[in-house]
Every structure is written in C-alpha cells, then in structure tokens.
Amino acid sequence: MKSKIDPKDTLVLFADLQEGIAELSRTLPVERLKKGVLGLAKIAKILGIPVVVTAVANAEGPAKIMPEISQVLGDLPTIYRTTADSMLNDDIVAAIKASGRSTILISGVATELAVQLPALSGVDMGYRTFVVVDACGGTSEKTEQAALSRIERNGGNLVSVLTLAGEMAGDFRDAEAQALISIAFEMATA
View (cartoon, rainbow, N blue to C red):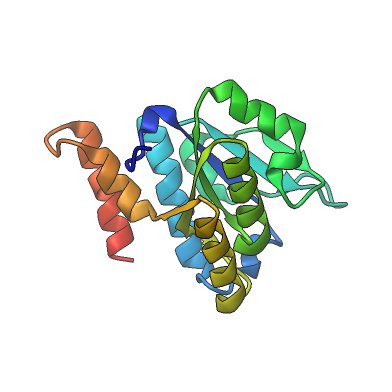
C-alpha cells in the first residue's frame, strides 16, 4: 500500500457543511473550520480533484452550504441523504464510483457522524479514506477523539490541509506548486 496521496486518484467528500450543522463544531472554532474548508476547496480546484457535496435535507428548503466551497469551486450540486453515513446513499456512492478515484478525503461536521461513518464505510468498500482534521469539527474533544481513533484502528487515515498542500506541491518552481504552498502558508499562519 502506498503512503502518499496521489491527487489523480483522489476525491473530496464535503459532508454536512451546511448552515445549522457547521456551527455545531466545538473542537475547531467555526472560523478555523471555514479556513480549512476553503484551503481544501482550493487544493481541489488547483489539482482538478473531483468534489462531492452532501447534506441532510431540512424542512426549510435547500441546505445553505458553506460559501467557502462555492467561492472557489462554483455552485456544485448537493446530494441530499436521509442517513448519517453518506456511503449508504446510492447517489453519493454512484458519484464517487463515477469519478474512478480510490482515495477519499473527507471534510465535515460532525466528525463523530458525518465524517466517521463514511470513513469507516469507505474503508469497508475498499477506498483509502483520509479525514482532513483541520476541515472537520466535532461536538466534543472526547467524542471526536474516539471517532478519529476508531477510524485509524479500522484502516482509515488522518491528514491536514497543511500536509496535503505541501505533499501535493511537488517542485516549488512550478506555478501550481506555488499556489499549493501559499495554501500551506495560510494554514500555518492561522
């Protein structure tokens, strides 16, 4: 098994980064969460990494997804689900399979549900899953740590936006690398 993440084999799953849920983050201040989500969206844009956005439907109408995603990637379709685990939704799984990618980077709130469950299911389905810890928020330090520990014990991985930007940058003389290193710098100086 390879240890590095290949952007050509990677997909980003943004889960429940919607108004009313994103604000539940207690382990990462919401402003810092937004910065991580923005950085991850920028990485996806620069490297052409496909993105799947999921949300839970509400009675008030369409979910208001964090603007940091559309600010960088434009308006993406939101796939609504009725389960805590995105991987139990046929449309989401179909979108992931259609990408042809076998590595999934997961960002969302709450780490204990919207992140942990698809990370575990993704591993069970044969995907390499990575939780992007500085683009996720949990409801408490204790419960988030339990979720992250369970993910790691069962074959999932943890990574940060800072690490992703640096790892995927390659040769710093390239314009793409410069853009990625600027994301790393933004995350390091938060």
